Amino acid sequence: MHQHTNALLLIGHGSPEAAGNAEFLHFARDLAAHLGVATQPCFLELAEPSIDEGFARCVATGAQQIAALPLFLGPGRHQKRDVPDLLAEAHARHPGVALRYGAPLGSQLHLVEALADRAAEALAQTASPVARAETALLVVGRGSKDPQSNAELPRLARLLYEGRDYGLVEYGFQSVVAPDVGQAIARCVKLGARRVVVLPYLLFSGFVCDDIAAQARAAQARFPDLEVLVGERLFPHPALLAAVALRYQEIIAGTVAMTCDLCHYRRRADDGP
Image (cartoon, rainbow, N blue to C red; front, side, top):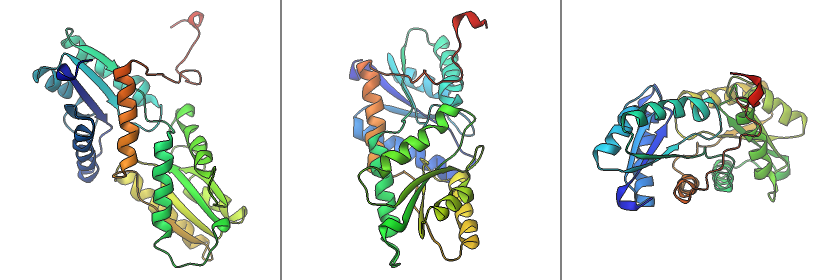
């Protein structure tokens, strides 16, 4: 893909809250400067421009090859089915343009680094004498109906635990599947934690981020002897730029690898339609 004909179509989910969408657009500008590539942000739903409009804007600026990058943390339905369907429709309207599709961010070490920094920042705000061995980190994701997407959280939690001196690193979900934040905090308490640092595994601000904090406050009320801290979301940590840049470079190099072995959309060829 030659730089002067290449455009990056950065696809966000979209939020009903303007602040979250503004952060995504800010990130798109930062990414364009970081990569030195013309970057067109767009949204799957709830905000404009749509994927179709974003694709058309890339074409209108002269792009002959479009790298479509879904800015999703895990490999759920949106990344596997919804976005590809919309991209196929847009591509059909501009058949002369080459299109390549990227992978979700996944449990990269860049994001582990970001979470470790978010934990350190939260701990720097407390004067509590609780030891690191009695401190639990709790990584909290959105939650999905896709088992493969949910399985990224325990993997990420283990990567965060390795090589660090926290007593525990656990995981939970804001919604959809168990354990929720309160259940996960209760588990940390049973395992001996006297302090829990809740780390939202989210890209941008919005309702999900706010609800994770609200669930953490409710758990604090149930465990008055426990110290509960809540860290910041991933944006605007610089490691997020590095993680997305890695996925973009895979598109350019033609080395994108989809993790389809555990995908619940996968079926045998003889299973029928």
